[in-house]
Amino acid sequence: MARVNIRTASKEYPVFVEAGAIHSISTYLDEHFPSITKLVIITDGNVGERYLDTLSSALSTHKPVFHIVPNGESAKTFEVYHECLTFCLEQKLDRKSLVLAFGGGAVGDLAGFVAATFMRGIPFIQLPTTILAHDSAVGGKVAINHPLGKNMIGAFYQPEAVFYDLNLLNTLPSQERRSGFAEVIKHGLIHDHEFYDWLRGNITNLSVLSEEQLSYFLTKGITIKGKIVAEDEKEAGIRAFLNFGHTLGHAIEAEAGYGNITHGEAVVIGMLFALQLSKKIVNLSFNTKELEDWLTKLGYSTILPVNLDNGRLIGRMKQDKKSIGGEISFVLLKEVGHPILYKIDENILMKELNEFVRRG
Image (tube, rainbow, N blue to C red; front, top):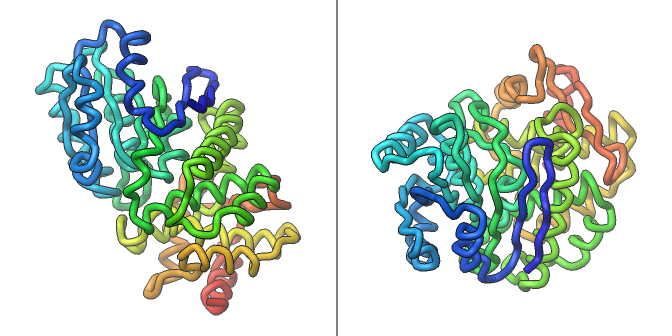
C-alpha cells in the first residue's frame, strides 16, 4: 500500500493509496479510535448505490449509520448542510463520534464542514471515490457554496486519515475522469516539469488507465499538494498557487450554474487562460498549442462555454477568495514549476478574455 504522510502545523495524518484500501479502515479505527461512540457515513446517491453495502460490510463491527445527500455540487448548499447537522443531532452524536466522508470532492467538502462545525469539531476521515478528490481530500479545506461564490463558506479542518481505494475509480464516467485529471495536470504545471512531461507522454486515453498509472499520478499529485500544505496550511502564501486555473474556472462554474460543467473541465479552461496571461505578462515560454492538442485528444473542451458574458465572469472573479478590495489576482507561471500571484487590471482582463474567446 502506498502511503503519503501529510504534515501541517495543526496535524499529521496518512493518505493510503491502494486497490482494496476500503477494507483497511476498520483496523485503522480499532487502532486509532478505539472509543468511537458512533460512526456516521455521509455519501451521495450515486456512490451509495454502488458501494455503500461494501463499505458497510467492511465496517460491520462499528455498526455505522449513513446519510445520503444529493449528487455533485448540489450537495454543497446551506439546506443540505443543515439536514446533515439535523441527522447528527437526531443520531445523538457526541465528541467521540466520527464522520466518514464517502464520495467525491463535493461530499468530502460537505462532510468535512459538517465535522468541523458539529460540537465545534469532531474527527472525520476522507474516503474519496473520484480522481478529482485526490486534490480536495487532502489539505483540510472544507466548505459549502453560496449562490454568489464557490466554497465561500468553510473552514480549514484536517482529516484524521485518507483512504484512497483505486477499485472505487473503475466505474467513473468519462466526464468525471476528465474533471479529476485536470487537477493532476495542474500539479504538474505548478510544481514539477518532469511530472508534467510524464503525464503528456504516458496518459493518452483517460478511459484506459492502468492501476499502476492511477497509483503513480495520484500519489505524485498528493505528494505535491502535501509539500505545499506543509509550508502553508491556511493559504497565507504559497498555498494560493494551488488555485492555478481556478480564478476563471470557479467563475465559469458559478456563471454556468453549479453542476452544468464539471469543476475540472472549468479549471482546464481557466488554466489555458492563465497560460495566455502568463505568456503576455511574465514572458512565459510555453507551447500552448501542444497542451491544447493533448487536452483535445483526452476529450476536453478548450474554449469558454457559449452564452457566458465576459463582464459577468469578471464580476464573479472579483468575488474570488484571492481577490482583495475587488482587485483580481491570478496565479501565473513564470515557467513550469514556478508560479507567482499577480494582480491584473479589470480592463486588461476584459481585453484578454475577448481575445481568448476569439481564439476558440
